[in-house]
Length: 302
Ligand SMILES: [Zn+2]
Image (cartoon, rainbow, N blue to C red; front, top):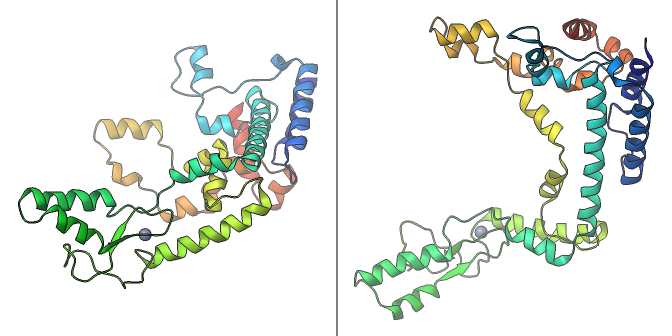
């Protein structure tokens, strides 16, 4: 084994997975180590992945490698070692983002919160437009508008823009049900969301420089890595074979025959071709009885 291959395998073994304690300091250190190690070897000693079909020229062979194979490239390849560096840089970026969230100012939070709206089924502008139409048709006056407006209330859930009637005798009778005259929210969902938001504000006061009402899932979504999003997508998608595509094109096969069964989508066999397998050590692969998939993968590369 050449030096580059040895280094590539070591890097994969030590840094090919998300570390248990990933914080900004740890990730900066790891990225630094990987770059130093890569600088010490000649990367052209490593093989590159090549496509095995649909290739007309040597350059095409490198350009046409399917995305899934690139992401699951064996450690001692140019793509494999790039994946390790890539993963760690993304993790570093995530830690940077985490720091940014921690230090966000109150004004910044309010700005983000303003764009997070969950309900807008019947808003004040809708109410205004509807009533204005009645006035234009001569069915009501502006004095009526003011009286009607008093029968409607804005929902107190900060993620909701709805207005709702609190007087049974309103102009949308039959369409929108009036709520109790003491009601503060347009629905029970809004009530729940309102109290959740207050709780979240208290909770984040202890976590961040400035608290926020935003649900934790929204904050976490900002931290999600692009790779994990891609993996979630690829777990749901089944690749078409070249000959199937041709059969589809000339009409000898129908697209319905490719609809994945539940087993194919959720089953263990399918799970094996995702990025996760590549994250396992050889020992873990043996433990889980996944050798044949691991083997298959490395022969594809050669
Ligand atoms: Zn509401």
